[in-house]
Image (cartoon, rainbow, N blue to C red):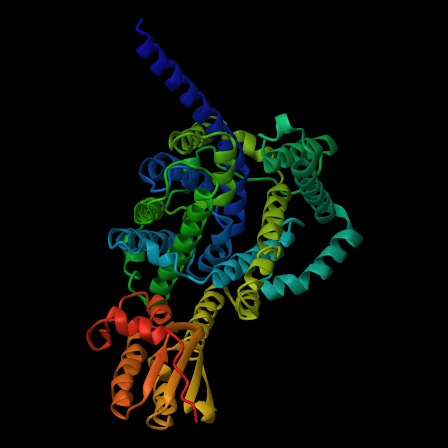
Length: 529
């Protein structure tokens, strides 16, 4: 056999081996999360498995981010749960279908990059708010109970539910013990697991130990209830449900799912790009792929999907080389769900809830605040308000308010211009020091300051503290320079610095020769009196 062919074959085997191993790791991470997210969303556990299968076998082939893994996400659990409570399970498929079509249209229209323009403060606030909602809701499920309602209601009800479970004993107390055991195992495994065993995901280890403990002590607590045929959960849209597709609440729900799923996916894709040196994400392609995946999920009436950071990071850390690992993980989910669904009935619901409580805690932990603080207290304030409104009302209101606050902050920043005027009568000069942003909003203020300058004076405009200048103010300075020269005055201005801030060369009325520019940059000669 030629050496070249042998080399190609060995390289192919090495590549396939790494992707196959990575896919098994991702499958083991995805299995408990798919079921946990399903239960938290108020749908059958196998609904999340089907979404994970579609995320691997369909989206894996066409994704714009080859290393990103798609599936049911904790970030959508609260919103989906609310939609199921408000509109019923049959309408969930219609909403997800519409959301998928919106994502597909956005991808085809090249709008993927625009989702990246959402303020980091809003994104981090949204994720932290979702984390708190998941934590507070799933804490009650961890006690074999049900969420009370809104995030703030769930939060305030935790002490009473905890006290009742401890004092009464019985199933809620046993479920709590299994939940605490699961969280402890995940925390200890992440911190102290041997390096060679780190490839095994902490949630899977926690669930396996919970299954063993529950079986050993013969605990009478809630266990995962799955049908013999996982495909029985599929609910195709009916003509009756499609009649409501253009009703305002359904459209708002579809836009909400599309926006949050897209933002979470592209944020995850951006984070995944920082974890490897391979192919970069094609954002529009990724958005369109997610749209196709969610459209299929909607047709089947199962959970929506996003790109998910936990499974994606596990994929990279396990040594994935191509998109084959994400595809194979969907295949393993399909084989497991088709052949071994009965094994899921041994899993305590409280253990899966504990996995999500731990996930919610990691999302809610304020690790991003120090980084946001580097960009000003206003960023921290926006994130905090977003979190508070999400927990106090609902996810959509919190995100919308966060976006509005970031927009107001942007308008405020671009409307701040300070002008200090200092007269030097000894040299017949005026110094104007500009700081902030010179934009159309503050053009009257700049014009007023220039109009107050005495004719025939030597005017120095200092730009060291100016952050930005738009075309309108740029043009005002140029025209005023001409008028002031007509009064036998002069202007000393850092045109090169101003051009750099404006990011383009002066044109039209701002044409000046190199000689004039360098003369303007030199210190003006002082007249002796």
